[in-house]
Image (cartoon, rainbow, N blue to C red; front, side, top):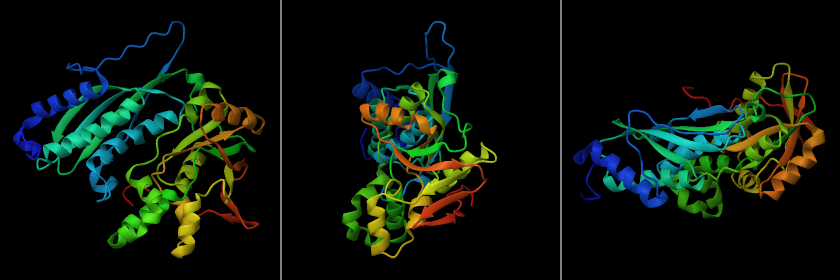
Length: 338
């Protein structure tokens, strides 16, 4: 077998063998072949929910042309892990279905799988198997799962007036990265000073542990993962919490410094970069104001970050405060099929 061969020349059985070999090489675990996949949990006298997430990665819409095969594999798992961790759940297993074009080279298939396995290994997750089929473009569909005491899961529903809004990273960096990659791609080599922004799109930052820490200590009243932009994430929270709204402070706690520089240098709307960027995988939490010091203490002691960016209000609108003005947020964020 030559690495430059197309996968159509070696077939599904050999592709599965490659996955098995790479899993064993990188983790020391052997993949068990069976009709179903099994996972054992033994915790006496404690009721736990199984918590699952399946978020499809489609190369045609999720992979800019600059993204490597390794980065595709990594991102496909990261975006699923993010949705569990923001609920306070430690991922424990993953099943992955792959749609692959027949003209994909074996070497590129290996890079794709290595990206998946390396990020799975980072979280010490069991890669249990999956399925492979032929498709017109690369499709990666992981199903990630974990277990949690239902009393400690952080749901979207739970906002209370005057709860504080916290985030575990700053917004605007991926907005800059997407603007460069999508709108200035013919000159991308001229933007080396914004390499962090470009990398944030191609290779998103590792997911933080803040959600698990907040859940274990029962500090958050609600949470959501920002994958379609801050604007849409805030609106999605309100769908689960009628008669609630937000007042967001448009300041250095919210905004990444690189996006401020970029907006000035290229006369680009800073509000758009911050609220409509998308795919940041930043976690938003709401918390009772009296618990803020405890939350920061627990999170800081584990190397995490929390930034206060606003509060919950008793009005079904989202405002941001900028230069002493209260402005209603109208943007919708990203939505599939629109």
